[in-house]
Image 1 (cartoon, rainbow, N blue to C red):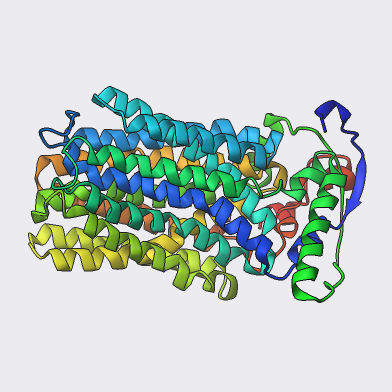
Image 2: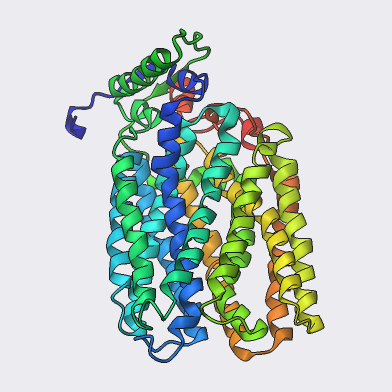
Length: 497
């Protein structure tokens, strides 16, 4: 159906209630694998750079680059992700989730393949920028689609595990690099190039699975395509009833919305600034906190281990894989608590807890300890806790803003928060590691601890109790306000939650 054929009006729909009352099914697994696969790719991409970083700085790698430039490449990747998130985020809210999560994956694939052919630092920087742009666009399109398709009662744990699957890719990238950096098998200037090729192969596989994931019915009915939304939900319900042999319970609750083809950008901006200012501060704080610490360590861990603990470039990937496993374990083991104990205590607890452990890391560096085992044990503990909190940042922003602005809200807070923390982190860590001074590197960990702790405090005061609640109850769609009040404002009590 073309945009010109869409007829708009005021409708009453049960689509959200029907989606939220569904039992877990094959359809939901398809969503997890089709959409969650991008986090595996992102983890593979980012960690691959960290794993091969030491090799890239060695003579004979085919590209002359130093430790500080590795940090710069990380910052450029993040800059691309920020701009890509903003650019593709607004398109996702305007043209739909599915179109954009296909387009952004194609951008990622093209740039990753180009990275494998890097011959100079400038070309490496350029390809990393566009790889980041594709991944940034994925964040907006994928998180919004996932939360709109997953039932409310398990949305927290599923979202955290999907975001945490980033670290499966990171572990795979680390272990794969062990093989690819083996000079007995691959030349110095070949193995690291093949490492980026792995990401492209996996991306193609995800692209095929993703073709079977439908457009978000929530997006469809607001944009004048309620018949398509009903068809998709009806098909999901029918397949579940066939698989279980049982009739689904009747859905309870409905929404009345005034359909619109597009929401003006000025209206979307007004949502964060005027309607939900506390939620805007919360989103910014959570993203800055996790972005500084995570990107600073992720892009520079290989050079840190080599510079201060004498780990060879060929052995670095083993340690990165261990670290990645601890990061994946966090969301998997703690994720269900975000639905049961609640968002506020778990998010604040993981941010504050990881901040305390990050201080311990800084003290270890200051002490001059040469114990690699001690450093890795504390590092893994820190990020086991931090990983659940970092994943919850994406969940939070996706939940607490109206559906019409969801993708752009994710993109905006990811971009702004990451631009502040995610770019400065890799640059600071890279420069301080290049100095060879443990004391200076400890400063970066102290700063990381401080911004994580600040985010945890903001969550205590401004966090939203979103566990097990429908998305429409957490933040009323703007089009519902249109239908009920013939305007775009909401009750001040709801806005201040």
